[in-house]
Image (cartoon, rainbow, N blue to C red):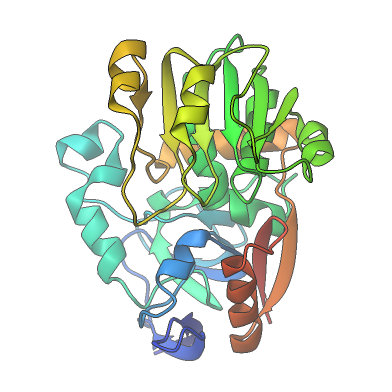
Length: 330
């Protein structure tokens, strides 16, 4: 039975090299992939002390397919994200919202020997998707989760809308590019002036530094606000620049409480839309859109070794990665 190299979390917080054994023969529609790149997501930091293979922003090459595989063949370049299975029969799955399938969530949480911090992986064909030729492995990897997350928050948007993006980091710098290419007016809010020029270069139309401000002014009130900053914002400062019936999308993972002035939601019709793992259909649309409009993450690469993965995670934890870290198998 073949063994693959994997990298797991550990109680020390340092990544540990290990192996996992796979069947000699693929069954059903499973495909064997050789990992060529893996993005490092902020979510991985929450599991670095857990004995499980980390990584869910994978890109790889198909090396073999199971007997029921219909679309992929050896040599295809594919990617996958956080959600990798579902029951396929519940109401959520039938609506295309398989990310809310309780069986799929159980699979993702208990399948500890799978992840993209590895030399190889085996997934179902229907849960991986082809990578457009114009996207490199390094560019495509962070799009599997980070890109899909912000793209999903922009679904159904009109080019006449104004999009606010709070924070310029791993998610924010992608959100700027997607929203701008969708034809929206993009207003970026950041703590200081340090990233003004870069925000404008990425496609922002307006930049606001919030540190020390007692009131904010925008040329057009925000119809959507994508919260990509790690620190919860001052809602008393932001509510006045939101349009009536504006939508707020908290996209970063935070274990604390989400607190917002109650009357603002009632009197202004503002609503909060919980972020979610991007659905499979979103992945396909997002990758095609990114390839067409030349949207790529700004990345740093690290060798996929115990030492360098730990180094990359420490750097991400300190907020020093510019803007997405990508691991390359050795």
